[in-house]
Length: 408
Image 1 (cartoon, one colour):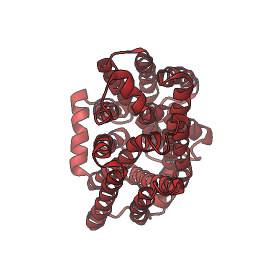
Image 2 (tube, one colour; image 1 turned 45 degrees about the horizontal axis):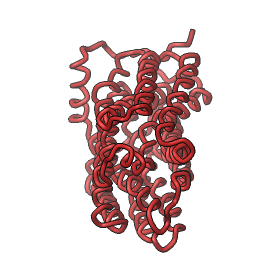
Image 3 (cartoon, one colour; image 1 turned 90 degrees about the vertical axis):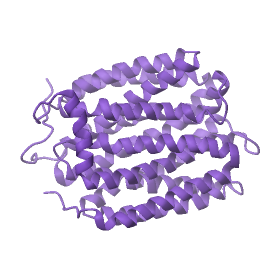
Image 4 (cartoon, helix red, strand yellow; image 1 turned 180 degrees about the horizontal axis):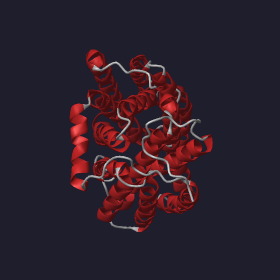
């Protein structure tokens, strides 16, 4: 029988969080979140298969983000009330069914509903695993543990584009989702055997009260408010870039295959690995400094990306800088929020990721529309503009953010 791990404890455990458990959570989080992002390099193929216009196909990504919002509101908070192990096993079973449906359907309406379900369940799994990691970690290593698991999320997200491109070229876009269903089934067996139970220690409350408590938490917590808005801006920037990239590289003069386009996602792994150490800086009380530097990098990244038509080396450099800056902000955000809210990790991450989902969805929708009207230059202007707004917001709110004490 697995050992029970309480969500919170009055005293820190005597040893560090087992590295094997942290590695499993990072791997599982990466595989879970990949499902939400497989569609980005497949948009042109899905548009042709379902007769969706290029300007409107960004709605496929938006459907997954709508699912993400529903997950964060309705499912993720349950982690503060239920055994997270049991909750995640139910979620992964439903996710497998949604992936299979997506790979088999020939109806545009059913495809969008299945994408919504994949966004809902993939997000619920990912954020549940991150909350699990934060609750299992000692306070002084929480930033490091969350950063490691978040690094797995980012690598899974980036590699999802490569995997989707390779499988699409070899067997068609449908096998991206059918193959993922098989991988998730294997992961379900591993989690069932290895993942320890993690029972809630908070007082039981009615489900409507639990959901409503998220909004009360958001209203009362200035750290959550400010870091959430930063997440909205940052992930709008990522949505703008990755949703438009497939159209830039698949059209003249490049006309790359989906496999080649997917390899550009691999470039961002270097930035993601470096950004995972931002949690360590947050543990040292340097979260605000890290945030300001990372937001500045986003602006620099868009300058490099704008030069892509002259050389693809600028694209490679821009991707590394963009992912480094964005993920450093993301890891720092989560570390600061979890430190401020040790008794409600699931609800805190649910509130925070609402901003993430809204930003990603709006970014994807705006990106495809701007690219159709103004091309790659328009996309770069849009992305740079949002990045400047994000940096300005951070500067204005810096004095309103409570000082973050080092955890005990």
